[in-house]
Length: 173
Image 1: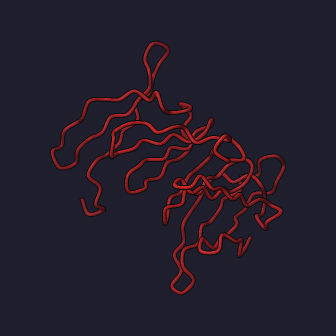
Image 2: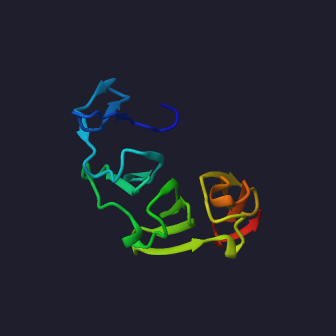
């Protein structure tokens, strides 16, 4: 299609007697592939997802699942053991080889190739610590900004924070 997508990934809901999973639909051939179980997904509670050139990252209530398209297999789950401040992840966003993670404890910049993390919190200028989701805004002269949506969790006020991705700094709330 015009977006360049070649496959549509469909979530399969599990039940008390069946496992959840995914199935892909090849847009060119108009055929479904064999379904795959989600053994590598840390939770069935999916909050958001994003794509890199070779992976699908899935934010869940118990960490981030990563499906590697190159090897058609799950990678290890990304959790607090990998530097995330909280395993409850509410959204993910991928750009320039960096995974941005929204959680109850802030906005984390995670670099998969090195495992390095940096977390922005209210003390760094965010409107609040709890980040519910992301939106992207591309400026004409200042690069890409990430809009962090705050959901009023833990008694914080709802609103938005704007982060300049080139400097990983909060520029507005």
